[in-house]
Image 1 (cartoon, helix red, strand yellow):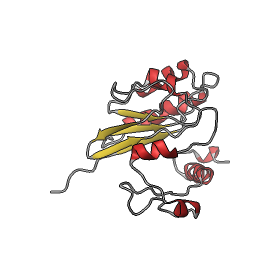
Image 2: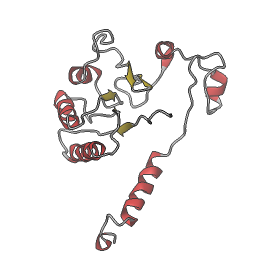
Image 3: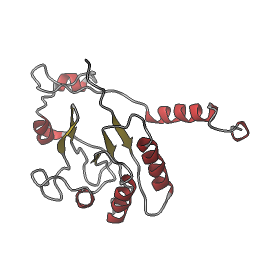
Length: 193
């Protein structure tokens, strides 16, 4: 008999902002949608940016909004997030805690899945970076030639973990989902114009 599928839900970029309640309302709606899923996910990953400014009060608000989820919730920083403030609201187990300025990274068992969270943020910058220490932690060996050529798989044949780059067009996806919603029966016809 085949094993039951394990569902991992992902919420991304909530950008909860002390100065603008719209983001908190959107996260609240998303949390309510995930909580209503049947079957329920076995775990939820919330990937950054969790907050807009990385303030302690924004993280408290994110944590408060996520309490409606009864399954385990895992978070991962984005470029707007502050590692120390993130750790205060979402502490790592003592064995993984590290210093407040250290990467926020962990490995968690989610049913049959092994969830690996690796913080690639660069404080004060918008871009991220894996760098040698993060790659070593992941036990990944990059193939520089394949990486420079923008290949799909950018790891060497001897890497214990393969890494694939999947190009996405986030703005296009948002536009497509918006059009889909507007054309669906969920939006009254008089509101579509």
